[in-house]
Amino acid sequence: MRIREPSWITIGIALLCGALYFLGHYAWAFWIIVLGTVLVLFGIIRAVAKPGSLLERHRKETFLPLEPLMISQYVVRAIILIIFLVAAWNLASMAGYLG
Image (cartoon, rainbow, N blue to C red; front, side, top):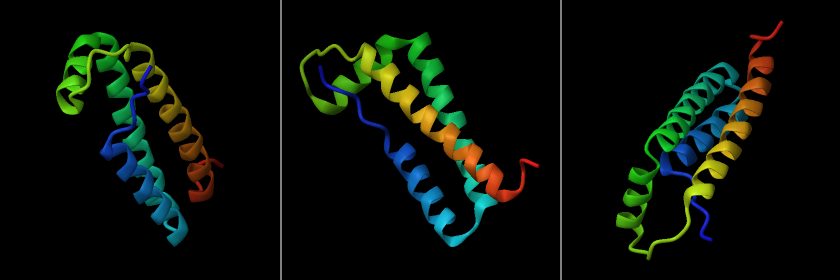
């Protein structure tokens, strides 16, 4: 089974948050990671609502034969969501949003 990799937008959000974190702009990094979390949630909702459309788009982009991608599209998105939520919690703490 081939595992679906994260999108370029997700990678860009993670890199931008990492750069802002190292520059000490915790509030900006927090809000960008919140945006990333919302985008991942929309991706999960779309994957649940129309699983066939995502698989069809993936097959058109990669020119691979039909592969079982149903599980991986949920697993990868869930892992990214967990990582973003933990990062958002830590950034909210550092930015002073959590008491």
